[in-house]
Each structure stands twice: as C-alpha cells, then as structure tokens.
Length: 125
Image (cartoon, rainbow, N blue to C red; front, side, top):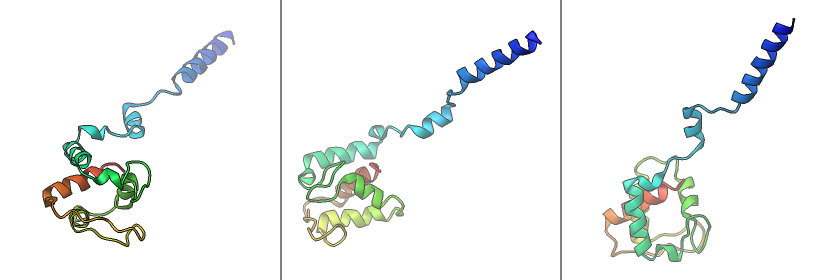
C-alpha cells in the first residue's frame, strides 16, 4: 500500500510541476510576430515618419483622424485591393469613412510611397 501511495504522490508532483509547460506552438500562438523586421513595416514607417501623417494620426489613439490600429482593424479582413483604395485616399484625400473631418490630400506623394504607407498601417492590426 505504501508503494502505491508513493507512486501516486510522485505522479501528482510530476503533473503539478509540468502543468504550466507550453509547447513551442502554443507559445508562438500567444505572442504576436515581430512585425518590425518586415520590409513593408520598415519602409512604411520611414515614409510616415518623414511625412505630415503624424499630425493627424497616432498609432494607438485617435487624434484628428483615426488611429493606425483602428484603421488596420477595420480593414483586416479586406482583400489585397484595399491597398490601392487606401493609397488613393492618401493621395486624393477623402471624407465620410471616419466622420466629418476630411482626409487632407497629398498629391505630391507617389503611388508607390502611398502604398508602402498603407502596408505599414495594415500591419499594425
């Protein structure tokens, strides 16, 4: 009887000690990927930083315009054509999607740069 009790206690101790162990797959599922290594992130961030975008937009909070995270969340399920659509709004300006305050046009911005900025924002979801 003592042997069974000893084995049962040992088994309980092993289960208790190993109960919180995570498999590598579970650990990676909980931790978001490091997007800062993504070339789209790096190029877009550089363009946003040297533009006037941060006058009206912030990454995590609404300002004059919506936050980048809110934009990324809104368009997370959109197909790839959303990059062209949003790049066009950056260049031409627009209104109505986020309230009454219009998006200022940036006609001197190239389409390629506008798309890079959109790709950066969409990575922030």
